[in-house]
Image (cartoon, rainbow, N blue to C red; front, side, top):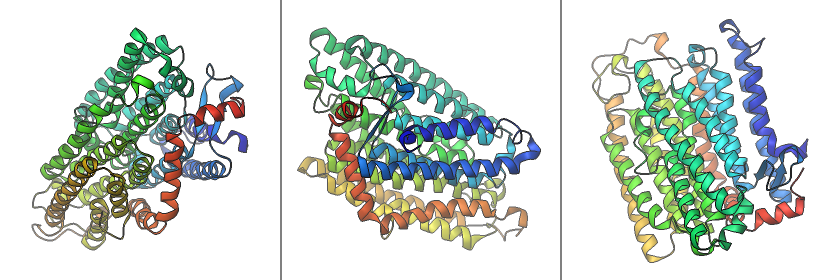
Amino acid sequence: MMDHLPILPILVSLIGGLLLLLPPFAGIERYVNRRVAALFLCLLQIAIAIALMAKIIDAGPIMYAVGNWQAPFGIILYADSLAALLVLLTGFLGLASTLYSFAGTDREGRYFHPIMQFQLMGITGAFLTHDLFNLFVFFEVLLIASYVLLVHGGGKQRTQANVHYVILNLVGSAIFLIALGTLYGTTGTLNIADMSLKISTLSGGEQVLAKVGGMMLLVVFGLKAAMLPLHFWLPNTYSAASAPVAALFAIMTKVGIYSIFRVFTVIFGDGAGALSDMVLPWVWPLAMLTVVVGTIGVLASPNLRNIAANTVLISVGTLLMAFSIRSPEASGAAFYYALHSTLISAVLFMLADMIGQQRGKAFDRFVIAKKVTQPTLLGALFFVAAMVVVGLPPFSGFIGKVVVLQSAASGLDKALVWSTVLISTLLTIIALARAGTTLFWRHAGESANSEDESASVWQVVGVVLLLMASPIMAIFAGPITEYTAMAAAQLHNVRLPVSVLQLQGGSQ
């Protein structure tokens, strides 16, 4: 079984999601069975990810050929330190979102938990695949599942947001296919390791076509990551989704970020000859502008859900700036920051829902409304979450931003990164201070203190589980940053996948 660890995260979600559609889990009245099964699947996913990380630390990256079909023709999975870390993050976020949904969201439709598992399958598959066509396949799996999850529970706002979301992603999928056809026509392969060897040998018209294909991939990944100017779909889409769905969606932009890191480091990185780092002139300014637009969005947000959505944009821009530095140190810093930003953005979506449930028709809008039923509990959770978001010590946000700032070594890089990140942090503090003041101190009359409006224990457990990750990441920052540095070193060693493939014979 240990030999098949790279494919187990995908199989667990695939088989688990299918089983949840069948008796004894089908039917509205069997929601308890579904909950127990969904919880077990999430815990199993986490256990497999930890085992995979341990094996990679001990024996190095693993190349897995599905069905024993040899590369570059077979379906190849590649589990290195980065992929395993993101699979663990996906499982942990899926666990917290599933626990939060037990408060009642999962009972708004009988297919919530199966679709959640298919969503997790698509995300983990995208992190583990080492073939561009199968990356497209897993993109489609996670997107189709996200279409269903977005409209879970119904409502005009969710339906409208879903229409825009579907149309944009269909366009993105079409561009993705054109890019794959272009690259396959010029290199004769879609295997990432194989393409990294062939891309530097191209010349003349083939080189131009490969550059066109690579730039189209940047457009696709930029759309998935919500990089400016392809970001406009994110605030409305994430704000419209139910809280556990929006929390899980926090990692979906990281799939696009991961794809940019993987493809434009391994294929179009230092070993690509004339095509080396061809996207940097575009990514640098777009990364900074993404942070700027996200910060402006945080300041202009009319409610807490929009603030949460715009913090996702800020994290995307910060990660892309780290990518643009093009050093293992910056990549390692980005991977630590990605863990932190994903978890805390998910917390904000959950808190917005919990606070909104206790403010009546005002929900989480920044207007005077009735007092929340549990001001001490929700106020404490919001205060801690705000400190984590802006990066105050002793939480992971502080360490995450420090390592990103330290990774900017040269004078120009340092000036751009430090000024952008620090100014964004200051303005985010102002926005969250305004939000907390309005939500907890500006109210008309006392709350009804209805038990029905009190936060469910499942909601509290989901939020606390994610919040506790921040001080834990700070306490164990040394080992975690060592691991992310190892992941960055493996990523930047562009010949490592080829050597692993040759060593392991391309099969398991």
